[in-house]
Structures are given as C-alpha cells and as structure tokens.
Amino acid sequence: MPGAMKTLLRRLMVIVGVICGIVSTPGRMLAQQPSADDARLVDEWLHTDCGLGDNARLENRIRSRGMVLARLFLEAIQKGPSAEKLVETERVAGARFEQRGAMMNREQRKITSNDEVATAARAETRDEYVAREKRNVSQRFRAQGVSGLALIGARTELQKIARDKTSPVRANAQIALKNLERKGPR
Image (cartoon, rainbow, N blue to C red):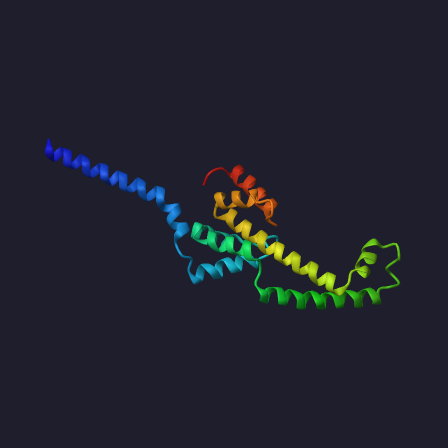
C-alpha cells in the first residue's frame, strides 16, 4: 500500500503542477518583458494602414507573441505617436496643404463658388489643416494599438479602455470587444 500511495501522490503532484502551469501562463506572459524584436514588431503594426494590403503574416507574427505585446500596445495607446512621427506629419501635411492650394488656384475655373468642399478647403488655414492631420495620425495610431490588443485577445485591457469615458479610443475598444465576443473564447 505505501508504494501505491507514493505513486498516486506523485501523479497527483504532476497533475497539480500542470494545472498550475496552465492557469498561470497568461499572467506570466503579460509579466514577461517584451524584447527589442517585439518592440519593432509592434512599431511595424502601429504604422501599418490596416485597410491596405495583406497583413496576414504580420498579424500571425503578432498573434504568436500574444500577451507579451500587450504592454507595448497599451503604451502606444496612452502615449500616442512619437514626437518624431508628429514632426514628420507636420512637414508632410504642410507640403500637402501647399499642393492643394496650388491645385485649387490652377483649377479655379472648374471649381464653382457653390462647391462646399472647395469653400471649406479655402476657409481652412495651413495651421488648422496641419493640426487636423496631426490629430488624425494620433487617433489612427492609438486605434491601431487597440486593434493590436484585439488581435492578441487582450479582453481585460480592452474592457478597461472601453469603460474609460475619457479615452479617445473608447469606441474602438468597444467595437473590438464586440468582435471578440462574436469570435468566442480563444
């Protein structure tokens, strides 16, 4: 009987160990420090226009890293794009504004005074245009962070954002959660 009891006890300990390992895995992955490669992967995702091209390989790479990336996506949502990205946006938007103005001057005869779009475009100053473009870039960047959280199935983090009435990406998080609910548990 003592030998059988020892074997039973060993098996029970192995089972308990396996269960503890399975239960603690998500927490350990979130606590695991992301690598420099993880940061580059998230940066690539944040600067990708999800509406263009085939991102299946990038999405698969993100999914394979899972919750390790959650911290990086949350940081992107909180901080927004880098100062360098915003300076680049300002430069590009300023040049685009000038090109738009030149085109409108060239095409003046084709644009009627009743054209609401043209009227609105003429009324917008360069500074207003650049500020709007910077807001748009910042919003898209943060929304990509939310979609990254959805991609890795970070429901808890998305729920926190969805409840935060001050979050600029609250609606994005709510939509992401609805989509995750439709897919079911992973």
